Image (cartoon, rainbow, N blue to C red; front, top):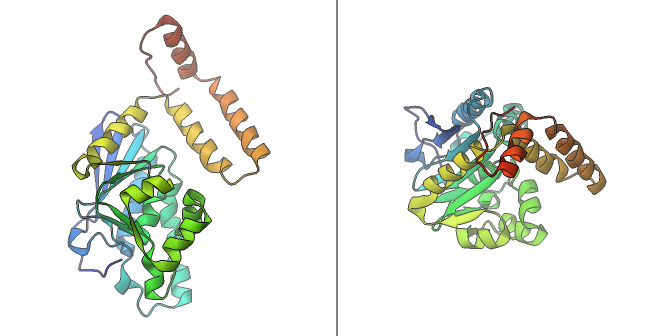
Length: 264
């Protein structure tokens, strides 16, 4: 976590890279990408806009070489009471990322701490650099994670590792996070964005409707009873049998050629 500096330029940069992908970059390097309220609003606006752009099939979310996001903006929380914290409704801002209909890949270099790790856990895939540090150090400030740092974390790594991170405020390395299942893969630092972009482009070339149904089934089924989750899975599969891409994919397989998917 970090204190804030004065913001003088756009705090979120969006780059349309072609091939159906976009890169969303947190841009407060002078403040270690601290998650100010204005930055959170910009981030939500960026994802809302991308959700309405059917040409974007996958998004990479990243920060700087030093910090993905080193945490919340501490000065913005000093002297703030419970009612004001409630009225900020930051959960609505995070929902723009967590509820994004297509895959989001977090590309982490450096620190992903506190709100930074919570932000990354809103993504669907996490690619971390070898020197990345991850943790939930809020307890050291007399508070606790409040944007998914207890609930998403325990679902990702289980009770005992989640308790360790949240109760001690310790950080872990990317290698430890990989063994816990907290990140999808670990690559050399200078390959993080390249690998995340490569994966995003690979997904973007797959059938969009199938990709969206897979993401939905995984997320909605995770906390549902198994029988309910299996029913959701079956219904999603049945819907895909009405898609043009299903016919194209199967025909291409039988004909031993490369499929041409059109997202229909």
